[in-house]
Amino acid sequence: MKEFKQVRENLLDMLEDIDQGLSKITDDSTVTDKVVTKDLQDLSIKQDNQDSIVSDIDNIKRALSQIDSGTYGLCLNCGQTIKKEHLNSDPLSNYCIHCAENGDLIT
Image (cartoon, rainbow, N blue to C red; front, top):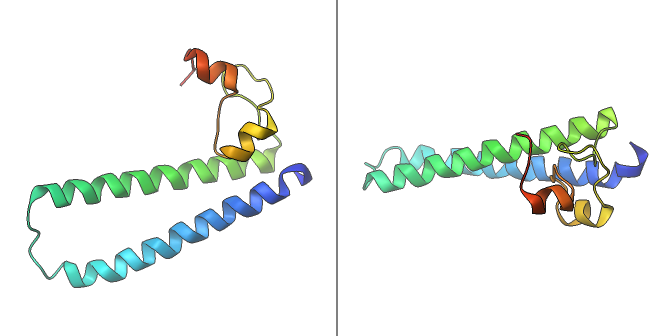
């Protein structure tokens, strides 16, 4: 876990940023809820954004859990270690480069 201390801190910062963003959206939505929505596309965009935020939160929590359990950085497909360079560029990565490129991923 010490090896990924900085990654853990970065992930916690990401969660905090998302939380602050959600607070702002919630505050803004109280004003916009009083206005009739122009069209269904606006609702669709809001739903897509919410789905994306929920997915981001889930992925960050999964990575934090993996760090805490000592399984962070292991490919979910083959079990091999994901290169640190890859984790540095994508700390939420679930797969090693080899498995990601081959596309035969266990989901």
